[in-house]
Image: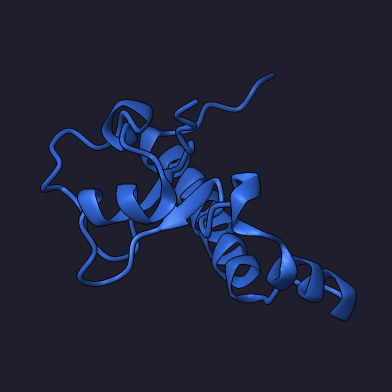
Length: 106
């Protein structure tokens, strides 16, 4: 016969699973990605006229940044449209993760 669980028991089980998942994600985000010395040299010597942008596809907002400054820095004037979790341009705070899609004006 199947067990019947109360909603409290199910909620506690799921909260523990999500807590463990979040701890794992935090631990993984703290680890530095390993790159070889050759990869670092290639990144530093890459010319700017190839469309190379200083931002990754996933960008974490730092303190004092606005969507306008991030858009100028990364070449993405459409940050709000690409990130549905940002409802208003003033909803930017340190630690916010946003998607960057560089805009190429050709």
